Image (tube, rainbow, N blue to C red; front, top):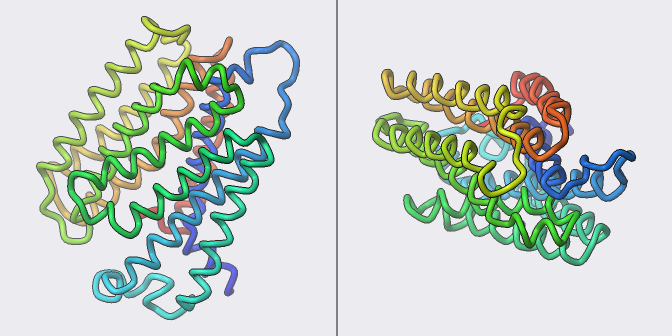
Length: 295
């Protein structure tokens, strides 16, 4: 039972979406472009790295939010006393350490990116989320670093395509905007702005083929699914601006990172099958979301 409490603290459904970041980054790096099977060793290490970094960041988010959660979400693992604060510190620190070490086993470049992601996550947990302006940017940078961690499998690709990190920066900024005041409601304007950001991301994805070898048509089913998941949930939350609808929009935003990453993987690979491989993570994440909190 104790293990389940720690799993709830780490939010495994969210961690699966982070693995999708790595697979999308690997596709941008050209890992799936060769006719031979790719070297899965470094790729799996980076998946382990992102799992540690993301889960560790989530754990520390709850650590720093303890006093607020005592009032707003007393059922969570820390305020309910199911997990001790000292245990959460050790658990979160251990996860971040695993994430950093796994990345350094791939390359010094990957390791340095992992360190940056860990620092950005801690900065958001402690300071960034309290700033309406810097909070969304801070969280977006965490996701951008996660995507670039996958791209770091090819230093040359990282030098050419680092700017694609703007896509997760924009989208996570939109999700973070949506999540503002999710416990109390009354954030209609923030969600409308977030939906506008989603439209700008869609335009950017469509424009990728003008600057890269991105295949729009084979990625079309995936970014259509991503946009639909978000638009439907956000429009519902705008119409009826209640905490439950806002939290659903946030949940859909987080889970839709998988089809968004699938669209990048499909577009930067010779076939849409790579995108389908990434999309297979969605049922896994949806299953975990039924048993563990996402927001």
